[in-house]
Every structure is written in C-alpha cells, then in structure tokens.
Length: 523
Image 1 (cartoon, rainbow, N blue to C red):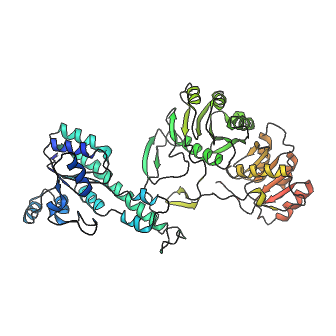
Image 2 (cartoon, rainbow, N blue to C red):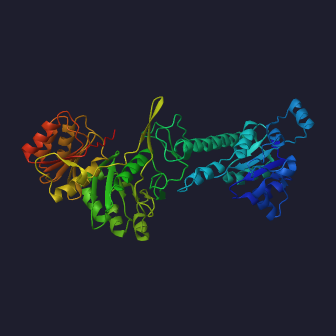
Image 3 (tube, rainbow, N blue to C red):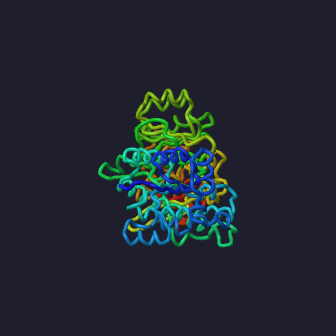
C-alpha cells in the first residue's frame, strides 16, 4: 500500500472533479493540473500547481504540448528502487502517485454530422493517453484513474487506509486504463479507415486491420445454453438508428443471450415497414408478421393468427407506441419480451402485472433503419465481416418474367411478402395475404421442403395468397408446390440455370412471377 502524496489531474469530463479534489486535499495531497481542469478547481477554492509552473516549461503549440515532459513521465515511470530514486533526484524529478485523466471526446466529435477532418484530428488526445499508459505501466507504485465513476470508491478506500490504495486496486485501475487507451486508439483507427485518403468520401474497401473495442454492458446468466458463459458488449460510438443495445429496459427479468438475439431480429423486421407493423419472433425466425392501417394492436392480432402455438413464449416487436389496446392483447399470452418505440403510462400499468415480461423502448425519435454499418460473425480463429443487408428491391421495381403480370392487389401483397422473407432463415418460403403472413417455411435444406413446411403450418386456406422465396428456385418443384397450395403470384431473386424452366412452370399454373435480381439469404 502506497500513500498518495502528489496527484496530477487533467480531465475533459469535469464530472465529480471538485469533489475528488476536495477529498484529495483532506489527505494533504499536492495537486498538479492543466488549463481548464486547474481553473475549475481554483474557482472552487482548491489550491493547485499549474503544470507549466511544475515543469518550468510553458504550454505550447495551442496546447498540443503540455504534459509531455521528463518531470511528468519521469515522475510517473520512476520505480521505488535505489537506482531510480538516485536518477530522479539528480534530475529534480518528484514522484507522482496518482494520475486522473480522461481523454478528449474523439468519438463524440466524429459522430457529429458533417464534422471535418481538421476538427477530428484536433480532438485526438496525445498527452492524456501517454500519461495513462505511463501510470498504468508503473501501477506497482502509481494509481491511474480514467473514469469519473471510480472517484467515490477511490476516496472511500483512501479514507479507510490513511491515504493509500491497495495493490489490487492499482492493478484493476491499470487494467481499465489500458483498455481505455486501446479503445480510444481503435476509435481513431476506425475513423481514419472509414474515409478516403483525400477526405473526399468513404473509404472504398475494408480496412487492412480491423480494430474493434466494445465495452461490457453486462454479464449474462448464461449463453445459448446454461453450461455456456456469456456477456453483452456494446459499441461505444453513438448509434443514430434504433437498436436493442441502446433501448431502455423498462421492466422484467434480466435479458438472456437468446432474448437479445431474438429482439434484434424482431426490431430489424418491423423497421422495414412505414405502416403500423408487428412481428412475433421465435428462435430468430418470425412466426407471424402483419401490417394494419388500424394500428399495431390490430397488426399484432393478425400476426398472432399465423401461428398462435409458436407465438407462445415469443418476442414481439412493434413500430408504434404501445397503448392500452395492445397492452391488453399482449397480456393474454405468455411472452418473453416486447420492444417498441415506447409504452403509454396506462399500457405500462397494465403490463406491470406481468412482472417477468421484459419491456424495451427504443425511442420515438427515429423509427427508420440505418443505412450502413457492418455485420460481424465469428468463426473459430477468425471473423467474418460484411455490409449489413439494408438494400431491398421493391416489388414495383422487379421484372415481370411470367406471361401474366400481377394485379395491383397481388403487387401490394408481394411487396409485404418480400420484406418479410428477407428476415426468415434460409431456405425461406413465405405465404401472405393482405399484409398478413399465413404460412412460413424457414431453415430447410431444400427450397421445396420450405414450401411444403409453409403450406403445412398454415392454419387457413392458402388459396389466393402470394409467396416469396429468399433465393432462386433450383428446380420447378418449388413452384409446383406453391401453386398446389393455392398461391397466385411469386416474387423471387432469379438467377438459376433453370430459370426458363421455373418461369414456364409459373406460366403453366397461371401464376404471376416477379424477379428482383437480389437475394436475401440469412444463414
């Protein structure tokens, strides 16, 4: 345990600064500080020694050079050995026992729309990370604090231990500081990798080195199965689009690994629709989806009709605020989670009776899906990275390849079917009618099996429905099954070597067929 006699405070985030400094002064700690940090403490009546006075060197180059000085880094890196003490004494260097630093807000700066390269560069902190790393390297003697949320615990320990911090505390703080500087450098590398060399637009390719630093939001009870350990990490960069990661949890049990996966799938699906929409997800697949002009309560009723058995224990997402009418519908069935832009007070009160039901609000301000971003999936020893599947060709833009064109009613239904099919695990076949799923075949090894499964699971007649396929038909048998079920039109990507045979089958059955030339596999 080493007593803290001298501390260096230089922070961008001033939360808790004055209270920390007052606590340090209770233990007669000398405080060194820079610019705005020093002014904040002086205005509160706290004595500080300006860095320029301590080092005998002025701050120069518009503040770019303040703490890069031997008296600072020698004071941080010097060990408590005879050799180091002798060298430090000969150079007039005093030990610094505590460093409190948080960094220029680079991530927040580059998240501002329209921010330029010059402003981004000026928000790259140099002295701060250098001090954090020096102090963390020498944590056997120096305590390093990079998070204002740690101030209270630091002062409490000093109060208990006559101004000292235990070795275990210094080690935990050092570990956190190195993680913080690594994340900071990763954010800078990611930003620079995202723009072209002349700052004229986005970079054309994936970066040579992919630097990812996310922080642990929380540990989870277990992973996909109880014998697997798991945690949920969150991207620290601001996210403008709705997401499960940024949604507020309003009530219910702790979210599980599988809950989070299903919530993400459910939210992605309902954000496809501008009209009121509801989706029920089970094991990462929709078991019911609907849109309704009458609102999300009606949409949920229609979605549930698709497969009410599978809806039991499911995840629900809607793209409108939940009112009392929908809350009543949700109360009639066992559900794991509901995610929505928000919940009216009366809806919250009604759903509070289901104490284990998790409610998540992703916010009313933005119900539009994002335009870019990456999708990441791990394999043993590697990471697969791809752009997210944000594009979709509308039914109106698709090519009519059959002799018969779809009717206006069929075209509207095909548009809905195509959007839903994009979110069903491949191989996927979806039957719909009037903005409501009727039969969903997901995750089969052959497309014809998906068509048969969708028809088998349908609880009402498929006569007059339309169908969507996430990939091309390798043979005509899938079209034959869809026609046999009673559908009148199909939308699919096309691209099979047997496309002519598939289109001929559609014509033989009198089906309208659209080809989008864009597939949507979900493996």
